[in-house]
Length: 308
Length: 215
Image (cartoon, rainbow over all chains, first blue to last red; front, side):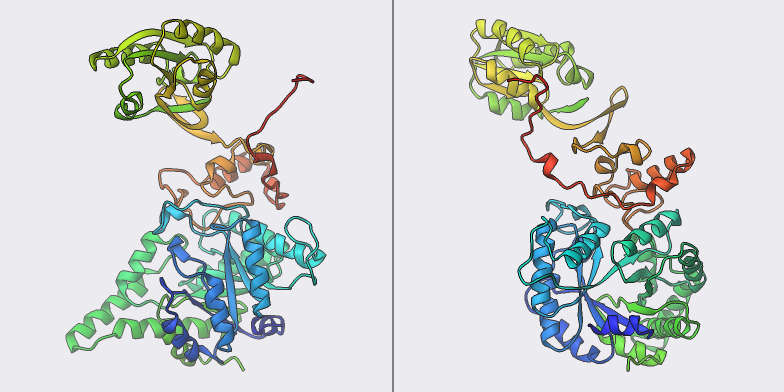
């Protein structure tokens, strides 16, 4: 049983962090960040060509992380691989001891940097989860043929966007994901706890039983927040956060100090995590530092989170 | 209806090369409606080819270029004029049927774009992917296979913004359209269940359907 499963199913506050493989084959930066994260998180989500931009595959970095003593979570989208491609990769992942996964639909190639690539979408996120659940229950592959030596088991997760109109569609699909085998759910980045609470109420009302981990994106600058508000679906950074970041930048300029907005972003993220945990709003957090994974230990420390 | 679009004329001219005597075959159905292969377009192409020094030795029109018998008859007339090349102004299927009956090489003047509807004259929208296993009965008559850029069958991805698709912000999110339609019909319960995976065996091509009982 992996660390994340043990934590969440054991009623502990789960902590995961996101990491992207490089656009290339030198994994040094990722492995350095991994060293800092060791013992501080229950799992490291490795993205599957996030934003449809070409990177080294998730499986490769997952193997590297596993070898380095971390607990990788393999993200799997339906964008580039058919059911056969996905299942083949999952069998290989299992052979390397990778036992936690997260299913996603995947951003469309046209929004990424290899827009000529053929979109596959043989299975959507629900379909991927269902396929793996059937594999585990029956010991058969995606064609119904027996797997030699039985099927591996994965702790399966999925994602949800809490800020969504109409929310009915997200809740409805969330239920389908859970019914298809998702035991934990990571949300899109949240910035406003009141709207997150409303989302959690809807999940409760729909009687969906799963472990929800709130997505945390440490902001680095007012510009980053504005950009995400305009371009990233499901992201809504409140204006007062943007104003505070802008004020920090102005203060830094005046005093000749660099990095004040980043520092503020770290503090705001830590504050939010602490509140989520103290108020018991959900079962854990998933931190998406977008290239600044080295800041995650500091965020967790400030939030008073340790995973022991 | 099969929606076609004219190829750039230079591409057609390059295909024709130094062929001098040209025959033109139009299509009386979809390509006429798309203004890519009707009487008017045949006349325009004829005038253009002649302005470029070609001789148009014959023109013809099949009611449906996708129907073997009608095309056979139309091509007989064109073949009799002894063309060096035939231009077929239909969809890709019509071009292939014409090529089966032509005594000279057949070239397409159109690109075949999609199966869809004429929303109004001159405006065509894609609406069916010929998936072989229609789901419209559970989606309020709106097709997620063709109108969702990812062909998602269990609801939307997280990529819509203000009801518009992440792939092309001019397009509505199909799943929000489906939601609104089902809500207005009082049938939102249709969305509750995961759709059984229909797989892709039914779209393994080329497909043949025979309702004759013999060949």
